[in-house]
Image 1 (tube, rainbow, N blue to C red):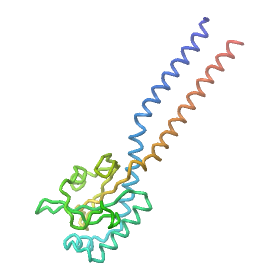
Image 2 (cartoon, rainbow, N blue to C red; image 1 turned 120 degrees about the vertical axis):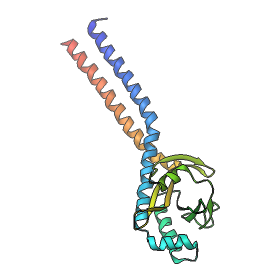
Image 3 (cartoon, rainbow, N blue to C red; image 1 turned 90 degrees about the vertical axis):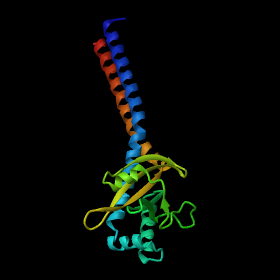
Image 4 (cartoon, rainbow, N blue to C red; image 1 turned 90 degrees about the horizontal axis):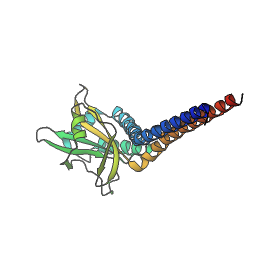
Length: 214
């Protein structure tokens, strides 16, 4: 085998090896990127929701825990609309009673006849660390977790009063089944990189072959 051919084969082997590494790293990162994108979608939805809150009415609702309060129905309707428009599994709000050290649900965007619906005033005995951290100002976005209801990507948003103090946490979930579209997006990018790499390898081989002929 001539030195020129050895160089060509060496270049091809190195290029293919690099392509395999890139593909492997891409597969490893694809899921995390998809989760990040899904988490961002949930966060954007929560931001829209919080911007439309009437803090005075919301704080009154939290204190009275009265489902007959007109704002309760209004709030649920808005969250249900956002949940549908942005294809989320659920949007809900939690409030921590600091005096009694307990969390309870304020609103839930699921239908009231849904067995998983969380009623106003219902206690949450196992608030996640993500909820606790968000209340402390350490907002969590894109949390991948599994519950008895399934596997979700969740994000959390602070609900602040007029003085800027966080008094509740708004959370949103997206089912991992709906993360597939983001996973496909990362796959398309990966396939594009692979295609360009293969074209470059082919171009190198073609140019090297012409050089040898000349």
